[in-house]
Length: 474
Image (tube, rainbow, N blue to C red):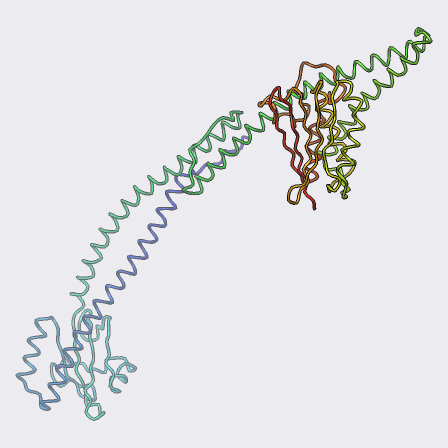
């Protein structure tokens, strides 16, 4: 049975319907509130108008206890012009004028009791018991020295107010429809803009997933989508850098494997040949000691290769633990000078130590010696008939160690590459007694970082090289 494909609800429609639904709900709420407010306002104005007429009638009754028919007729004509009528009633609720065959006691008992206590009653609904389809009316009590004697009832049909409300609602409806139409178009336009920006990101992501790491999208800091585009471009840049690094590392790995294979093949061939010669008595007695020394020398080369690789892996995986202590720097530099003096003499180089006896350095002794030996060997390797200086000095809260030579120097384009694993500045060389595997300076860099220090190299081709190590005095 073939599974059914899940139905998609496009993001543009999600955006559009979310906008429209919010607008519709907002419009409905505003319309209901506005209609209710206008309706109450109209009824309140009508009630205020009726109350003002009622007070005027009661004021005239107080001045003329016996109601003048002329005055009542005058009020009747004035109110009739406003489509309003009034009736007078006594304390029993019986109409005194404009009798309608009903009594004021048709009011609910609760409201009638309030009238008898001197309160004005306003009713904003239909009271068909008064013989009209729907009215707004007010009841004003007549009190004299706090005693209830009756009052006046004023009524006005709600038809006029309803027509006004209907007209307002009609215009409100037109306004809502126009606003809804404009909002519809605006929501669709904005939704298309947002979806188009997301679509570009999706297309760019698809290209990256296919292996194209050079794609870019327009970015900004205006909103989250713009920031997402910024992050996307940053991610692509990182991927590009990583791919370049991977490619460079792979090239260096191939070169390293080729170099290591050659470096291992040569001593192994030599060792194997000498052993076979000794085994089969093919080497003259006077040459046997020389052959044994040659085997020892080549074996040490193999051990050095293995040790350098093991050291690098241990450092890289944080398996190296430092045991820092206060060390006299002059003593360390003199030890380096003594250990490498023979190697320096082979190339007619001179090692000079310049450091005050009181200068101390906070470091792991063995690893500090390893750092300086690697750098000094590197200087010896690329210097001939020159001088190598080992200097020490203090600066603020740090100890500065410098290793400077008068060798061939390093090309400006190569300086940053010397710290890379497997990197060899002179790829043409096939065998070197020191640093031949391209791991020495990489190990130096890692060890300095483990000491929370910094190392820099300054060099000019043909004018020598200077390594500067800065270690903090903690």
